[in-house]
Length: 107
Image (cartoon, rainbow, N blue to C red; front, side, top):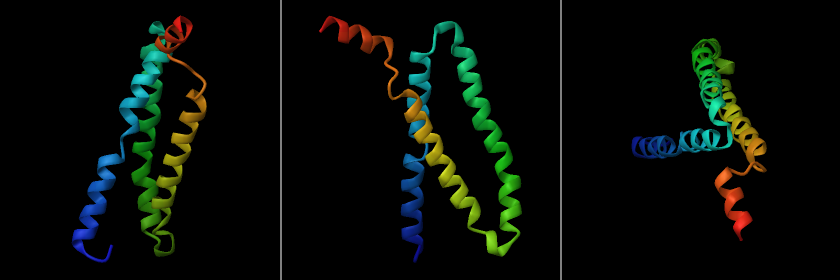
C-alpha cells in the first residue's frame, strides 16, 4: 500500500470479511448433520482448522527466511482459503436443511 491510511483501510476491510464463513459453516453443518453426529462433525472441522493454524508459522518462517520465496505464504494462504471455500460450497450446494425440505413439501 502506498501510505499508512490505505494500508490500515485495506487491513480493516480484510478483517471485516476474513471470517464471514465461520458462523455460516458451523450453523449449516449443525443443521445438515444428524444430532448424534454433530459433536464429531464439529470436532473434525475444528481439528482441521487447528492443524492448519499450528503448521502455518513453521512454513511461513521457512519461506520468509528466503527472500526469493517471501510472497509464497500469502499466495498459499489465499489459495488454500479459496480451495476451502469452494470445496465447502461443492459439498453442500445440493444438501438441503430439514427445514427447507419441510417447507418445500408443503408448497
